Length: 266
Image (cartoon, rainbow, N blue to C red):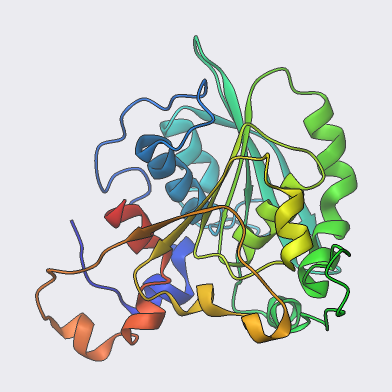
């Protein structure tokens, strides 16, 4: 199992070709809203896979396709959401079998101007502690795809989980405020809203997984009124040997944000 991080892992996670192959994946349990490391592993890998483009974005798509990896893992993609206006993407996937379930997976920040602008447009929170307020850019991004998402969710008859990495984690959290899922698992999430927003989600199971020194989890600053949502579960990267990737790759606070490390360290 790889324990080092390259710039490619961090900046272009969708270019990988080892989805669902890095380690064993025990059976997902869709019946529990409680934290499950097994469920977290599945959702972390889906949050990594959603970065891979398919026919909705690239013609021809890179091979093997995202659809290929999903089907190999027992999933069917029900719908892909893509706003050309904001650059927001997500996929709704379904796992059949005796205990079917669905997962809404939001994509995080890619190397695009639109995504960078979304991340930076956090806005200014008011001093009114009783007023729910959130990151303006993330709200705009979710608004651009929510109508179609809400319609798709309304048609479901199985448990649904929300997940995402980085900006995708923030969008999954915002989506939970609009339609509560069975549980939310976020990976490397920035702060999303103020304390009133956090309080409004107290009854939604949200598991905020943080990989050691992941720098993205420290922004936007608490001094601006932003707070984290959900139960924090922190991963450790200790005990790794020094190698060329660790010397010439991204510094640790950035390396710890790479989706591949969330999969490997859960």
